[in-house]
Length: 262
Image 1 (cartoon, rainbow, N blue to C red):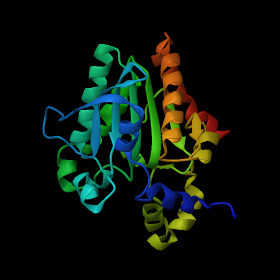
Image 2 (spheres, rainbow, N blue to C red):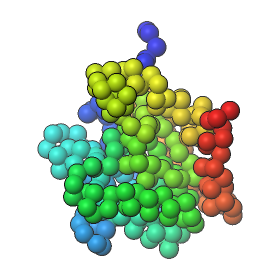
Image 3 (cartoon, rainbow, N blue to C red):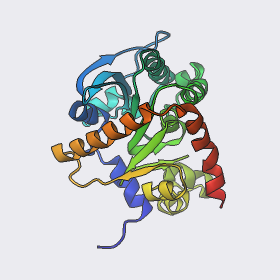
């Protein structure tokens, strides 16, 4: 079988049959209780969050949700969060810090919603505030890219102590189509753009952007979710014992550019 090209990974990451954030929440955690609203404007259904148990460990879990059917995807705004979605996520993370709960994020978005209303309500500021606040959050943060990881919309939930990617997920500052439209004024050259964006999980691992690539063997099965549950339980337990968590998180992100430049 020929090796997959980067754009093949993009197609797999976008597959409508791929497990979404709620699939992970419902199959990995127990007693999930969803919380709603940003206490400022509205409840953004593109981001689902609440409290749950991870093998008896109380956690806050947040997921960008795309939905499966066309009706679900429209209701979830196709996984493109508004600023109130990011503010809801931040509210839940600050609540987690107050009660000492680790935070686990599942990321799957082509990017933050770029409509006029979202810009009027401070989309850029909401993302920036998440990055700033997550950098100093005094509880463990584990972020997993489960599909698309597009631009600041994904990064707003990925400023964690550990960032993992599924084998066929992607992580990029821009979509291949957007990149091709800017560089060559032709979105049909997306495959060429994908080759140059270094957006695959193995690219991100080699550049020091993520810590782990998770195999997609048996994806969507009970064995698959059990494997991720065990990985998360082990990692959260280790991070919870680290007295220098915030300082190490700071150094983690400071070192990314240096490693990439070598």
